[in-house]
Length: 231
Image 1 (cartoon, rainbow, N blue to C red):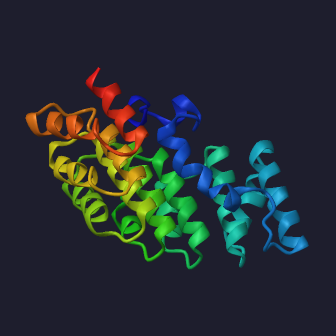
Image 2 (cartoon, helix red, strand yellow):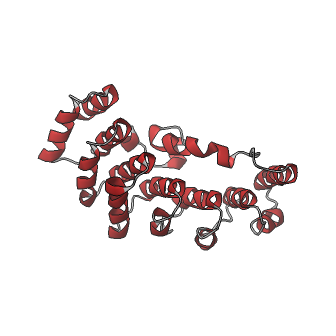
Image 3 (tube, one colour):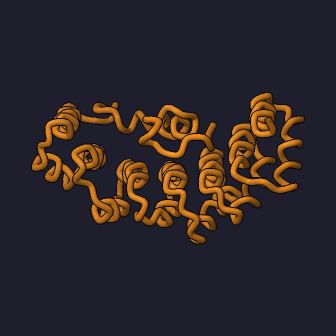
């Protein structure tokens, strides 16, 4: 379940907690995109190879390339050769290309000191969704993070963002996020499932009531999640 895996590095992205977000971005991070010109596609391949061979010069130069797809590929290569820093991520968190900002939010999961609040406020919903996932990786209970995630759960239009945000609140497990999780138990089926799983760290009468209510949910996966938590 979402709440059982604590680290992307541990599971390799194969548990439900990590896979449900990352699989949606595979099209952005493959070596060749349908929108790439042949020259750009070739350079992206070269950067990916450089990430394995350690060609720092090519990777560093590519960070300044005019094409966003090149810049985001270079960021991934920087991470692979262990040369990525919080300062570099902060610089590219303001990139004009949303693909780059999505990659920044993904890679930020590896840096607990990276401030994800600006990414949670990004204009692009895919950036916000990935940033919410990264908050779950950080497991930081900073009030600013909890407040932003709560705002997303309660008010954001995109359902996938709400799902990622409620899951992050569950991963963080701070009591201040519980009201938003309980509210999400009344959302769409996919979000209700995540919200039920996000109740795992909590133990209170209102949590027990929410789980018992979920046992009668019209969605079988919501019912199953509640059964699993109630034992």
